Amino acid sequence: MEMNIPTYSDLESHPIGPMQLVIDLPDYDPTKGLQYKWEHGFCIKVLMDNEGVTIQGNNEGLRSLAYHLLSLANEEVPRTSHIHLDSDSGLEDGSAALIISKELECP
Image 1: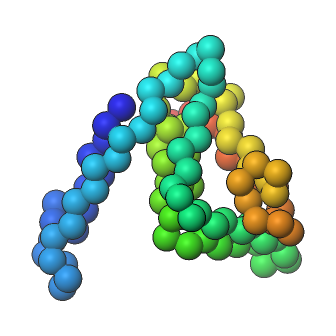
Image 2: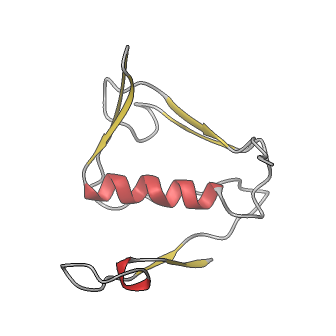
Image 3: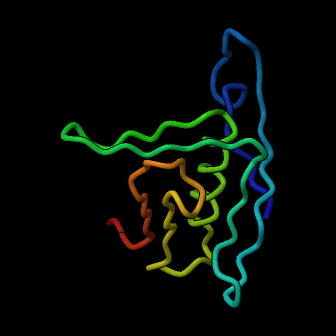
């Protein structure tokens, strides 16, 4: 699945000039479930405290997380599907678990 993301060039002019991203996501296969796409060198850490949840990442980590979210948002992915990340599945040591679920239907 290829997805074009609106950018500053699609909206108003931006001081650094136009930018366009084309993202190639894996197609959803119900026999395999969601397929994660990690960029080389990614780093993501999730912290939780009284203030809330903080997601820290380098550029590669934040793009990787964006790929995961866009994959989950694919129309073919069933409701109740989720992404579950922790220090054993992509997050840095000491990270809190991060679970993102596709369940809400808003009016």
